[in-house]
Image (cartoon, helix red, strand yellow):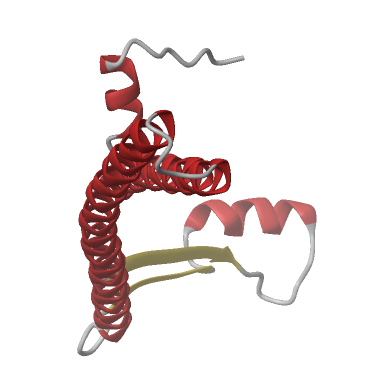
Length: 173
């Protein structure tokens, strides 16, 4: 910024003959006063410091925008991946549900054959084991699907809102 400074001085000088009486008379006569007055104007040429600060502020703003775009890109990618995983786990859950139902029907049919004496205990136990494995796969698929739901809510930033909607409250310490 421009600045203007003013300066001034007033001096009383003697004539080389020192006596108290003469000095007092000479001092009030005004013959031996010396004074000066000056102005100093400072104008920065081109305002370089302001322009440098402006360039630095613009650079910082561009960096912040680039960081924001990077974060937005990561969030979008995480949400897309979470949606894809949600769809995959849901399809797997549906398949395992059908597999459990088919295993249950096979075992019920085999139990009927066993009661009629047309099947063996070994075959019946084998189908019971198959049913338990199918049910275990279904439960695992359901848990994976629930995890995928939570991952999507986390990626979207809605997990706490959704917990509250489900009646789950989180206490802060």
